Amino acid sequence: SQTIHQWPATLVQPVGSPLSLECTVEGTSNPNLYWYRQAAGRGLQLLFYSVGIGQISSEVPQNLSASRPQDRQFILSSKKLLLSDSGFYLCAWRQGAGGYTFGSGTRLTVV
Amino acid sequence: RKEVEQDPGPFNVPEGATVAFNCTYSNSASQSFFWYRQDCRKEPKLLMSVYSSGNEDGRFTAQLNRASQYISLLIRDSKLSDSATYLCVPHRSGGYNKLIFGAGTRLAVHP
Picture 1 (cartoon, helix red, strand yellow):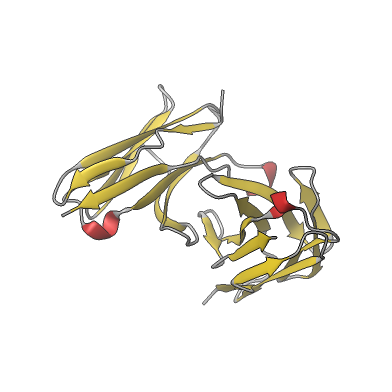
Picture 2 (cartoon, chains in turn purple, green):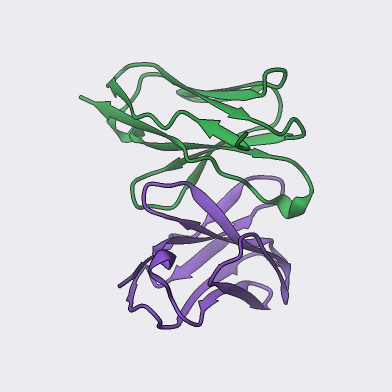
């Protein structure tokens, strides 16, 4: 069966520090992968999506970047975090013609 | 006009009540629709997919009105465990299957 893993679950980082969040999918190949962010009390904002290794599309200009070094691995990074980067980060993949399946998310607090 | 619009609520209803949420979408090319449920501080989970005029799954019924570009979710016999935020997500093919989420409607079921 297909599963999606995301870690860490929570993270507290100082302003200006780097960030690396990892997402991996099991049980499928060549998935479309997505990174979303949800600010407190707000909706989900699409940040990046990827249709294959090395293929990244950015939806919103920001302090973040994404990479897909392997077929089932999607990484979200930042060189220097800002306070505004705080939020709930969700990785997702799409199962065929159905909706997305989300990872359990990383709650990032930048202090 | 926003791509997806939902009444943020909260809808406060007693156990056993029937409650309905509406969602309007702006892109008439949307072909399928998803309702997601998001519990507080958790990832969204797929509740129901709608590919034609509607769908029914137990106490949950979704109805689609393409002419008026809205989709509704009806919950019968509300349970305390139904308390969550319900996200409406229209989808159109192409565009790398990006899903655009509304901010959702919050439901609170009380004893």
